[in-house]
Image 1 (cartoon, rainbow, N blue to C red):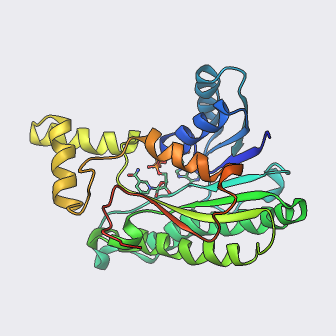
Image 2 (cartoon, rainbow, N blue to C red):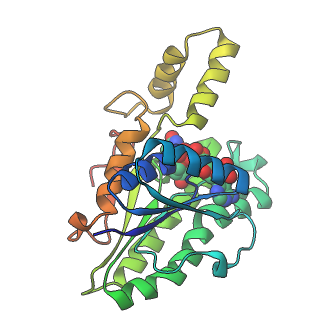
Length: 256
Ligand SMILES: NC(=O)c1ccc[n+]([C@@H]2O[C@H](COP(=O)([O-])OP(=O)(O)OC[C@H]3O[C@@H](n4cnc5c(N)ncnc54)[C@H](OP(=O)(O)O)[C@@H]3O)[C@@H](O)[C@H]2O)c1
């Protein structure tokens, strides 16, 4: 079955990698970035990576009010992946920091789900996924606002799942841990340059110091996270609904 899949924040990182997996499975993919330029560049990259891929773009900056009329109809799979963060002490966070992160991380998913969930229920098939974070559990001191937005997604996701009773629609949340995206690589490489250290050493030290409960003791690769997201985006995950799925390598220390 060919699905129409919309992945927010998908010109890079976990979103792009997920698009790659799903495009290779033959699904129609809608990539999203903030600008025409970045979205078109990502479409081009994905087309070069996936033979015969059916890919389109939706340009939308979720930090600003957006018009749902510019979004495609007939979406079967909505992956609410876009997420931004600030790293600063709680006392230094402004209202604007909080509102920006809630707007992008939560309200994008609220508005898109409000639009697409009724359509999915009417067609009796659909998948909505929310991409949370280990921070929803760890709530690091410098990421209280980001962690709060991610924790909010869990209630949102479960609440929407409750509305799918006895239908072919499911709503679930995935919890990635530290993942070696382009953004993470930039962060590690900058630190490595400052410390005159090898990036691999710096990455290892970060996990040891900041994610001491990690059982994999490393960053996850984007493809490890993307393959799991793709499974829950697909028809075979039909008995999983209202769930929280961990792919954080044990970093949260959570037992359930
Ligand atoms: N990476 C990690 O270690 C990690 C760990 C746990 C959870 N997560 C979560 O996983 C998700 C993906 O993370 P990631 O690290 O792969 O993302 P990322 O690399 O930081 O995100 C980049 C993507 O987000 C898009 N984007 C940024 N702001 C946007 C906005 N206002 N509106 C629309 N698109 C926007 C970018 O588009 P353009 O630049 O093209 O505009 C690009 O496609 C996020 O929700 C994140 O919180 C990540």
